[in-house]
Image (cartoon, rainbow, N blue to C red; front, side, top):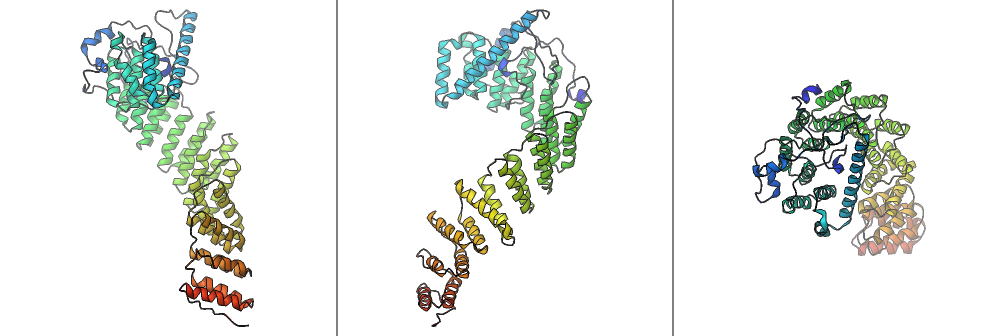
Length: 535
């Protein structure tokens, strides 16, 4: 039951200060942290030590909290934070002003973060120093904007340095400040420090928003620390901060990550039964589907997809890619074509990952013709096949093309595409294509590729050379065969090549030519079985 997972009494007296507006995102940040009552291992010279230093607590405790957390449900299940205590709820204008200020603050932070990101990494510290000199540290709101922007720009070290300098500017941190500090510690993977800040905030009625809680839950889940993730979840309930569907999505994904797929599915079922609260979204279904596919239960994942479609949800490309992975792992790659068809019927275009996963699975399970079909469909949809995958596909198709000559054009087209795109083509691939062209009686193209191969600094294998010589002689093109055989770069051609050329010279009555070839073979240490025959 969801109620049991979120167990604990609700402290309705706790007032929750909202985080910085730029952090009010429904999508969890990647950074997180461990939690609850960790030993205070901290540098006493750092301002961050105030979160465990009693002599600074009065500064925080005497501050009047000016906002209250008041959840109201949107249609999409997110939590809305309402107006300040100083503004009566009945005054709509006050709420509108606060919302305008929130949006304005978010824009300011985003613009500042873009400016920071645009700078070279070596210039960002100097840029922040200039901002502080120009008065950015003159007010708490200015510092909060700067900290949030630095967190958004993934500069946690600079942000925490600014945080440490706040006392020298006569500034005391508030909930926004601490929320940014949590994000920065999470970016640095300092999970213990982030946990201490969270504990301090909760203990002093400066509780983070649902977005910050969700960030911590998400981070624990990504590290597989599900016990701590559920601890944060219970703290949310205890302080009256209602989880959103994003919070549950993180928990479900974490459960699947550690192999607890049944628990993840049970949580999904409980969310669906919770008539008065949130509803699962497509990310909820995708997380459970991914869990099923990873343990070889793709049919159940497909059932969930059907259920999501019936519920009116729109699966995205990630949802379908989950099924491609599942079917390919289970040895059922042909079912991927059904998924591909369903995607297009649902107006969800496959991406490069969709096709690459399908082609890889088909090749892995020996479905070479089907892989070629998927490749052609991928190219037809305007996607470029990665060079490594193209090389693998080329080798696979080339193997069956030796028996099925109708595939020869496909092989050569793939090879030409690789060459035109500048893909790295090794000697083995050249050997494959030369052999294939020779067997298909396309000796002119085979000869062209031998010359191109040598221009690229590769040396053809003697077996490939022998096949080309045999093919040329078989078509009566003795002069071209002689040019290949007498090239100085081929100092040790195999005996079969000499035999074929001498035999063809005898057949055409060119006794002198046969003698020259025979003498050249002896000079190179090869004794041909065929000898010149005087007409």
